Length: 284
Image (cartoon, rainbow, N blue to C red; front, side, top):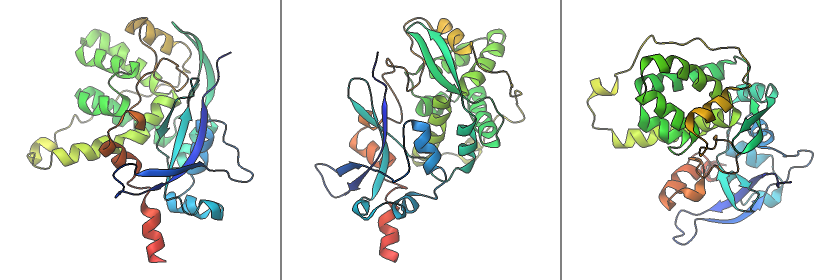
């Protein structure tokens, strides 16, 4: 039996002036009475916290030297990568409590995914944002959020290059696939990184161009449980495509994976928002 992936909340010391290694003294965070056995367990805990300073205040004294926190994922080959922590998102807790497991047959065999079938406002607003980008055919933003090599983005790209007849079905399949918690989470953790990078590079764009959008275009959210759509998607994409999920051993790319980032990109993704602990301490 394949070894399951392990998820750990970790803290380290971040030093932006260290040219060799900006992240040192990494340690798994242990919290009495709290067990993290899945990514959702960690998300459920941190989503109720206001930020990294709030997290730090809840930890034992031995962790107070840590100024940066993340989620470390160790795969079946004992290789690891990191994912951003989600803070201050109470509605995410409700979504996690409503997740349902589904077994989906793919070309790599049966795989268990976790699906959200509800209509929480956080999920609805998230999907409408993604749908809007799809309808606008904003491939740069979409590939940045979901990963250009992921099968979810491959399906998006099929929509972008497809015809109107096929796209009516594809947009519904994209909505269903977005209900996979792993895909939905990529949106939550990566949407602002892509936006920030875009803002930096487009400061000089004409205001009229920057405001151009597709308005009043909505596709009703379905309440149909996702049971077969992921398998259908994989069939459409081809047998060599693995669906984007942490349960997918063959997923080689994750835009939230720090191991694939340059030092500058890693600093931007891992540092800002988490380094505020030191700022709070200076003000005490």
